[in-house]
Picture 1 (cartoon, one colour):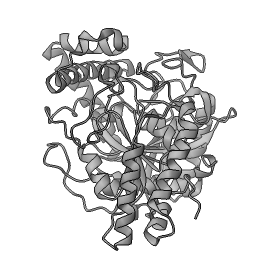
Picture 2 (picture 1 turned 120 degrees about the vertical axis):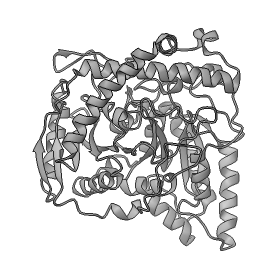
Picture 3 (picture 1 turned 90 degrees about the vertical axis):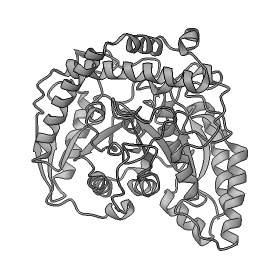
Picture 4 (picture 1 turned 180 degrees about the horizontal axis):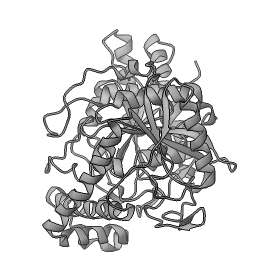
Length: 483
């Protein structure tokens, strides 16, 4: 049977289980497509061809012997070359000083995927240490990741390699990480589904600092072409782990089942701009149409204006300080674990990364703790809204994908903005830990994808998935990715 790399993972896994498809044929077909398209998209830093074929043969033997097999048996997956270590394989963090680094063990996430039968086919592209919302780095022979919708425009970041690989049929599932929008932004810019789970839902184990992920909240989540595929991935990826003190207890939710839930009776609030940011007219139009779709589901849909005590600039400044401390701590952790002092390699790192590390090292404890006051304001504002609403809707980004040689637009709809963060609506939910997804909401006149952000109450990941699947049934998007 011919392998279609745009087949949903759910269908692909069913065909492998039935014996209609061979894991070896599946992997080889994906590898052929990667060879054909990766030089253009730059979705992968490293393709694990030998390892993937070996694993595929093992999965095939397991099928032949009628042994118990997992829910992702024989399915190719990709993991971001950031914190998802694959034992004995190259692991770069997207950074030139680590271009020859080899992982000594698997990450917990990789173990869970492999135990479910998945085959890690490659490590996807990321900017150095995931530091920005576009995907390029200084690694030799890697290049800038572009959206498959337009090769002159960015895939978003920092999980741009994962999103582009999924959108172009170079993998079935890809893992991303999200500290300010790094799953949701590329999902929006590549026209795929991306989920940032509730903080702690998917464990993340950092060997030398078990507390590294909390300021701001760093989450790991799936990027897929369908909501069902993301639910299947979440059934594998989620669950507590003793190495992560923030991992949440097992909620015993079957995520693949919750996507069939109705959302009639839900109260849904929506805002195009948080009352703060200019929005591209085509993004606003797609968002308005998406809100209208939700009004046909039996849910009550109402406009909201979040009442932050602090300005948007103050919230972003708080995020900036938190990220600087995060990167200073990361630099120290990398030196402890690998003996690499990043500040000895300034010429091989972007100025922005160096500045963050140096600024974080100089941040006084009292200044750092003051960010908690702003963060508390953001949390209380959203929790007050969630006293009334089950879900919140926003655009994922206020703009469509922009040219890949920029950090972002300097103005939107005639209003000057900060090109680094003035176009994203994702980062507040990394301050609070709420689950949030980006679903494809439409296409601009230039053929560029627009993302809709769906945010749920804390730990209500099932509501986010149910709402995302409801929207997908009303306004399907997978057909825009085939071919």
